[in-house]
Amino acid sequence: MMMFYWISLIIVSIGFTGLLYRLVKGPTIADRVVALDAIGISLVSIVALLSLINETEFFLEIILLLSILSFIGTTAFAKFLERGEIFDRNDHR
Image (cartoon, rainbow, N blue to C red):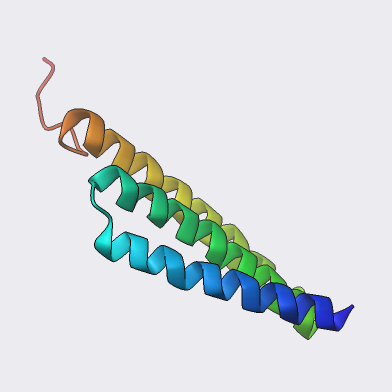
């Protein structure tokens, strides 16, 4: 079973490098946002596989933190693409 984890880690790492290329060279902003979201998912997968390989549960907090940060980043980019700004500075009085 350990060999399966190592092979999975190598495959996810190769996909991660492809996503880094898309993040840098993406022709549009939307491609870069999708690549950034997929990088977050890949990071969670890599940390989970490392946790399985090391047979420890200490990495579960890191997985949760990466998931939350990836979600916040994706929603911030989506709001930026929709409105052109992330924080609304208008006074609504």
